[in-house]
Amino acid sequence: MELSNKPTEDTLNDVLGSVYSHYEEIIAITGTFSTEWIHSQSGGWMLKVFDNKKSLLYIIPLRNEFIVSLAIRENEKDNILNDAKLKELHRQVSTSKKHTEGYALKYEIANDQEYRQARLLIEKLIEFRK
Image (tube, rainbow, N blue to C red; front, side):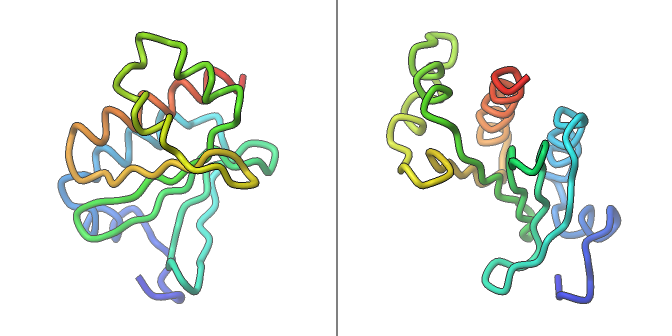
């Protein structure tokens, strides 16, 4: 998607293909957050999902997949790692690298398994940040 071609629902549906429904579900669960399409020279178009200027996540559309990129805070990381119900997230969360904005996590949503893990984490983050 070129700079002059800000993504529309039609172009996203075409580009994302079978994972478009996962994209729609993530947008639905983040419904109370604001969204804004931004363009990066190095990464192209991405959708910023945020609340009060603090980002919850970024969605980067690719052909037949999309990336969910986010950062979790120290206390969120500790809560996730201490919650046995979130065991499937432990490996990725425990190995995430610390940056200024928090611990960086990235999910490449090309299948149901990656989607389930990303959705679980997003739902938990929304719960933490209420």
